[in-house]
Amino acid sequence: MKDQRFIGTGVAVVTPFDQGQVDYTALGRILDHLIDGGVNYIVSLGSTGEAATLSQEEERAILDFTLQHVGNRIPVMAGNFGGNDTRELVDKVRSFDFTGISAILSASPAYVKPSQEGIFRHYAAIAEASPVPVMLYNVPGRTRSNMEWQTTIRLANLGASILGIKEASGDLVQASHILHHAPDHFLVLSGDDELAFPLVAMGGDGVISVMANALPHAFSQMVATALDGDLYAARTLNALTYPLHQWLYAEGNPVGIKAAMECLNLCGGEVRLPLTEMTAEGKKNLSDILHKIQAKLQMR
Image (cartoon, rainbow, N blue to C red):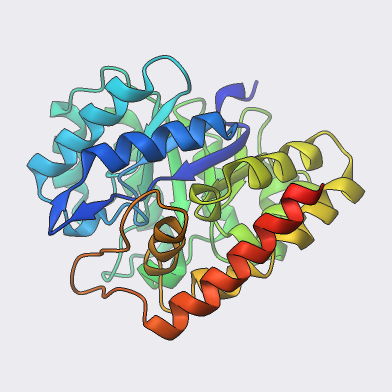
């Protein structure tokens, strides 16, 4: 049976900064914004949260703050469990304090470009060590290696320790094979906001979203409506928010979503090097589209 806690809209939460330091006041404001907007769960410390630029001490402090602030309102998934060294990652899992954490999100190894057998054994070792379920994360645009659907199904068949997959290959044919062959417990989530609607329409279980940081109500309502089978209403909502995608990713993620959050007065647009803040032209284009979308949503 599928874990109902992770069906719908999860949000890969941004990490707000103020003059180089984590802005916890803004982080609390963002978490409340997301929960009030109706999202189903939080993903802390993913790539959208700039985990690659955080120290271990910062990661732990952000996760502890998030768990305390969210409390029992919605589940929290920890996204800082990717790595290129399987042994090191397994050691991290075995020594980590998972109190309050409902699941972990683990991206496939990057740069080393392992074989499919290597990817399978990597995840199998993590799942064996983890006291909480593992959400696979296939994101070849970042890792430079695709997890083929056959490998995903092999992992899914290991049992409930493998919760599901955040599929961000952008390949709906690959996703359709996963949906067709997956066991009943296995969740298939979109890792691309632009493909959330079609994936759910195909039988997927939701999304781990970037855009929902800015528009949690509209995006989670779109996903929920699609899951309920009202594809016409979901398509209408998807069309309303769709123009924002172009500007969210025009200068990279989380550069665009940070700029959107700044437009909404939720946090600053600051990112850490090697990322740089969105250009003035990009911010203007994004702001114009965002405010047009907000106006249309208010008219509904």
